[in-house]
Image 1 (cartoon, rainbow, N blue to C red):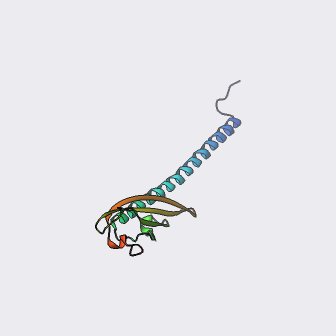
Image 2: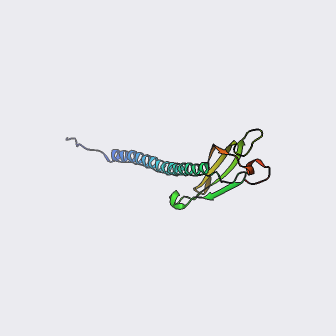
Image 3: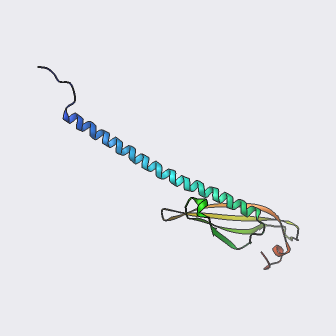
Length: 144
């Protein structure tokens, strides 16, 4: 009697099943990696937008103080992502008896938000800047 070489039908079914489980696991891993990459891309984009907005606020000494300012980013900048920001500028520190021309320290709080899968996510930044005080900054209830 001659022995035939090759695989039996049962061996082929077992091998195919094992291969199918491995392929499903790989596809699941690829899907998760793709979702994570998209989430990190959005987060990275928002961090860059927050940095740009904070730089604008640091340079703009005429930004209103003690008033909430907000806006939305242009969708061309966000890659179609709905995103916006809000900021609050306050006088953080000044001399005990300040005079116009003295230096003061502004505190800038910035929160950037974006929509991810119908869920609002936020990213917060805070910075300080030195500026020259004006009469409107010193007189209570006057100006900015």
